[in-house]
Image 1 (cartoon, rainbow, N blue to C red):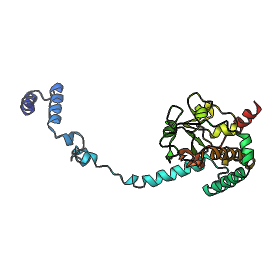
Image 2: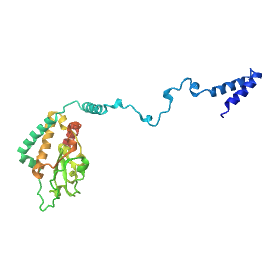
Image 3: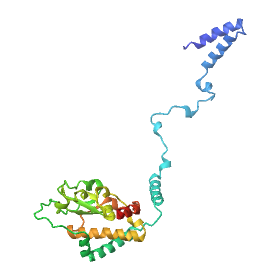
Image 4: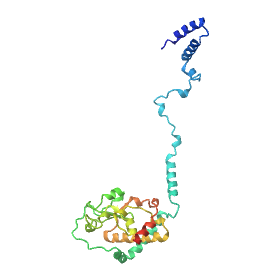
Length: 263
């Protein structure tokens, strides 16, 4: 190793006396090849720049220009997905608010009918209310709402995204109460199906994507229940995040509603 020139001289001396010696000829060829620069052995003559090892600084020189519009593209893709997800009826936010307000006004005008549909039991006396009773909670996530269950000092229930403070009815919503499972949850779907069970809580659909007949009927059920809650518990104290972007929710499964009615 490192003495190839000397070995090459000895090899040439032997070949002078025996020029046709094939093993020596092959040996000389191998040694001559080993003596050539690396670039020549690779057939490039000059060592190409691309074969030079990158410095630590240059190893991270990445061209990010192809991602300069990444955010815009992501927004466009999200819009495309929303459009692809549902191509049918999908009223604007203003149309939804208008229809809901009209239905609420009708329901408020028939408060007696609402009281018959959702009768209130005798309200218990001397209920110890939490210090933050009816205090505003703002916009809540499902996880945040879940904390206000029957085990909490304050109980909250969401219906169609409106969060009501039901703490004054521990007989209904407190531990052991018949509606304790509704606290810390949204009961919209259970109201629509008429089947109030834990399994039907926290299920989120867009009834406005249904045909006018089904949408009108289900909206009426929800508004009647909301009016009953208003009459008993006062104004909502918050809003559930899931209904902020209601238009992104999937359409309600009519077949499941019809099945509940048949049972």
